[in-house]
Image (cartoon, rainbow, N blue to C red; front, side, top):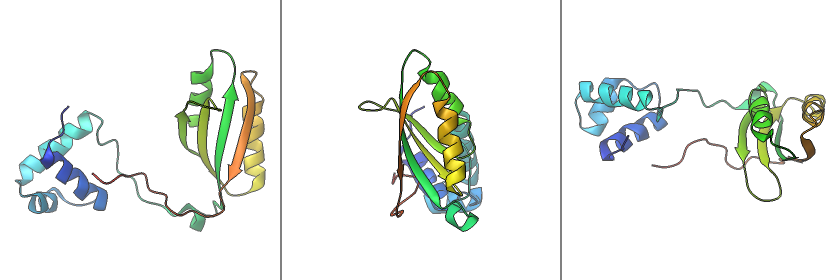
Length: 148
């Protein structure tokens, strides 16, 4: 699906507030309410819009540890490993990368015990050669949006 300027305007409005009504989006993008509805539905069907989630401050929920974990594997089971890691509720992102590691995982934990259990679970797999864990000291920016 090709995205035009109107679609980008709609996406910008949804990035500001995903709960905005079709009427409000239509007003702010100079299109009809029906056009706004149809374009949003089309972007949902094409998986451009993949959901509407709140922007949560996880530290306020007790998730004080944000980790960046590099994983080096061996063998042909990397995709299975990445999928297993992605299904863990603590994991917010898994990236297949080039360089020193085969995968990078971003995860949040409430305490070191949870982190330790997670790392040990990964290391139990025969196809995991090593992990390298970095704890963040301070979050400067954490958004899963880019400016369109």
